[in-house]
Image (cartoon, rainbow over all chains, first blue to last red; front, top):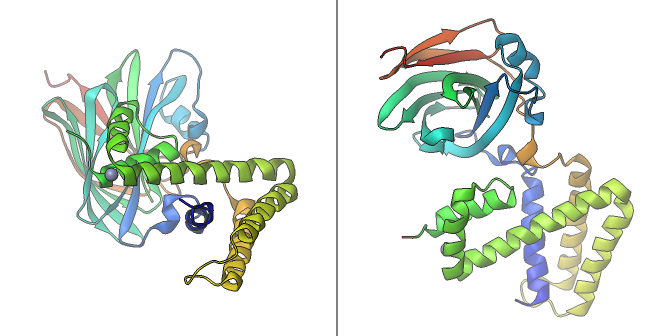
Amino acid sequence: MPSRSRGLWVFAAFFLLLLCGGSAGFCLAADTIAIDVGSVYASNSGKEIDPSLVHIRGKLEYMFDYSSYRLLDRKRQRLSEGEKNDFELPDKRSMRIKVLFVDEKKVRLYVRIQEKEKKLLGTTLGLSRGGMVLVGGPVYESGVLIFLISAD
Amino acid sequence: MTIDCGAAKTLIEKRADGLLPPGAEKELDAHLSSCRECADEQSRSIAVGRLLRSGIDARAVSAQSGLDMMWTRVRAGIEEKKPIGGVLSRRSWTAFSAGAFALILFALLLYPAGPDQSPFNPKTFDVSVEDVESDIAVVTQLNMGEDLPRVIWIVEDAKS
Ligand SMILES: [Zn+2]
């Protein structure tokens, strides 16, 4: 590839990326939603709080009785109404999220957590855009998993 | 059995964001070794990532000198290949670059830290839970007020 056209390409890509604000959120049309699923390992071994939890650590500490919150994994996916995605979770579990409805303010999701062949959880949720809900309880190592599900 | 180009592109984006799961590494590399288009796509995404990082680093030390350097490099690129061809006249290319740089400068000033480490920052905990069910566990809901996240708690083995 000649250097000029490559430069142009890199430029165009860079430019686009910046126009998108560097995050998927900005590029979203009203009828798509960015689903963010974080898997947090909560336990009483240690006192580690993951830096990504800085804004909600106070709430976690208030609501739960664990001393350590570690982010094991985080997955994001852009979905439009009617679409679904399988998010891989620790310990061979998986979370299927289907977008039932989405507009500028609200989103309605069907969330199903699968453990082996069994349905560990099936729930229908209505969230405001930018909202978050926690699903917790599955045993993991010496503690539990808490999934942070956000839609923005 | 290998992944298709669409899936490969999603994985390339994830890799650029540092979010590629270890399991997907092999799949992606297998596809890249057999697909020229996606391999190019990856080099572009790496180049952009590097440019962005170098831009941000430069800003930390000295925003101006970093941008001057980039600008010089771009100008050198323009000088080097004067005939731009039918698509863009030299003038419009210069205008495009100047416009692009104005925007980049602006965006660099506002650019947040990498999206992968970005903290969870919910704007609201307004959630309605319409129904919950489970084949193997007991599920309870915790609602401790609007200022706290709604929690769906799964108690495993409680049914057995
Ligand atoms: Zn391909």
